[in-house]
Image (cartoon, rainbow, N blue to C red; front, side):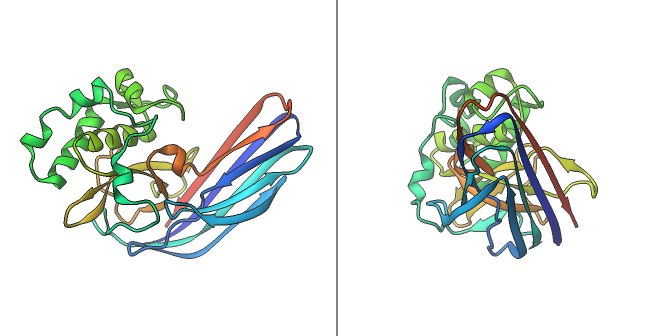
Length: 267
């Protein structure tokens, strides 16, 4: 499938910004299941400082906010050709070792609720792939998709306690549960093609677990499936903070900040 993607992020401030730095993880990864045909990123109100690949093999662009800017617009767009691999990504690559993804983080640290969620699964389901599909269902059943109840600082344990959240929360809980069961797991940010003219206000998120004999396998907990040709992987990490499309800091008393995101994915 050939997908056209446009991702625009805009920040506006009440007063001029003195200085700011932002990291952009917006360039999809070219791998077996997807090929980046064309891609470009432009910024207004800021300038590119450098690009590099981080320890998760994500392509990162660092930009600095121009002195006195009151609006920053980041536009990233291109074409990606995808294929359906039943969610199988394959063997591990990148600079971070596999065991690194078996450890928890502040956003994915397992608490009593997570441990209760996965209780008995190793004994009941000895097959790792079957166990991870079952975990995905348990997470989805436990946390209803609800917008506005959580944010980027909400931990998986907190979302599990609330019983409501979005794809980011589902992915965090899945990672915490998989690691509790002894498997490596990671967070994925990317895009999902839905209705042709639909505009999304956030990137999509799902998770991957490392399965013996298969390698990394994806699980979109929110939709109850493994990623197919409608999905585009952009960045991976141990949690949202490692894979956030745009993250950074700004300096100075610039008053309130407004964020606007518009994403279109079309075949």
